[in-house]
Length: 160
Image 1 (tube, rainbow, N blue to C red):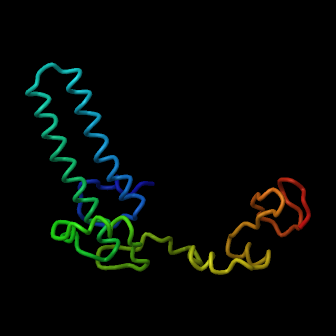
Image 2: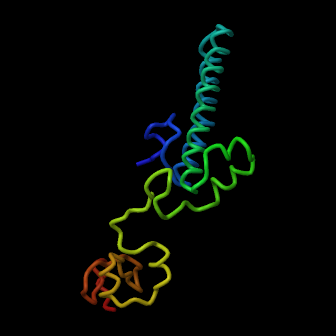
Image 3: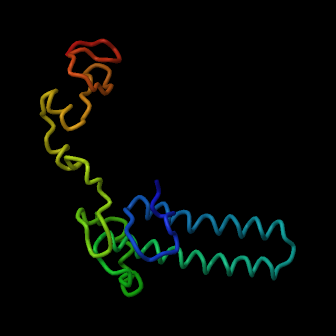
């Protein structure tokens, strides 16, 4: 689920980098498409200007709200985006706070026993250890994921 569409005009909560980039892209592309279609379909120039103005204001509000949520995920105030233009680069490149913070709960699944970073740092686990932390064991021949303790690939039959 894309969190950017959960209360899209609210300044409360947190969203991750992917959701922010999706929201940013949709807030830029959608109004452009609507204005171009309106300008080509409706012959009244004043109506086109009115539609453009309404879309510009709502898109700006939406972008500010999503930017605030993204900054909340980094554990910063939403006002940072207004004061510091470099905040956009923080929103794109800085990972979110892995813990709960003053702006809301973490976006990481608390039921997950290990983080992605921990899983990547232990590449030489045994088959049983892989399955214990819900990591598939990949067949060396066909590269397919296997989730059983058997030494035979479920996909190609290769024994490993």
